[in-house]
Image (cartoon, rainbow, N blue to C red; front, side):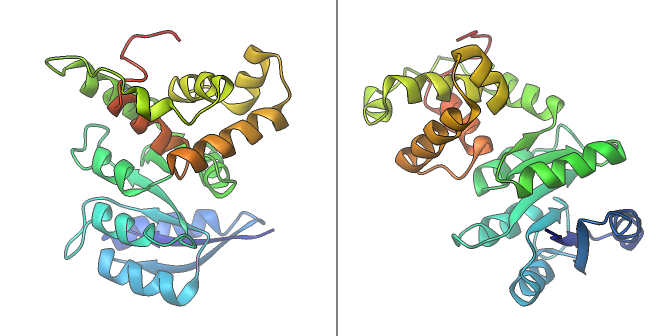
Length: 221
């Protein structure tokens, strides 16, 4: 199956570099490019990409707003944010807007390919430095958030357990090993949990867990 890609960046040289490299992969096809958020929305509507590689800082419409609009529809493409700065103040906004992954532009080629395929498969991928910043952001709050019982009321005990592990960054195989269940069972529980909490993917699950005090910075489970 070929993954259709749309590259969105205001720098033509960067778009060209990504396109030339990605087109060497037999399972990837670059179907278009865009120089800003406005153009990205139009190109996505016309080309129906599977994954959008989205820059954040662009003229006219930035990557956060474009991501929010792209992910507003259930049939929207997956969005992988590619940013130059791991401390970018817009990263958290894009995460909340529905982006499925974040990667720094200086990541290796293999890491970029892995990110595209992981995001296309329906998982989420967060750069370790960005995940660390997310945790540090909540650690600096003046007062810890108290978990709201109603948030977890609709989840089964197993789903609550898996939510904690997802928020800690464990992959499906790692969760399966820790809970001594099959990976298929983990996927089933995650799908049910996402549906009940109206979450799109793991990225939103991490934000949800921290914003609701379900996981606290430094917690181990």
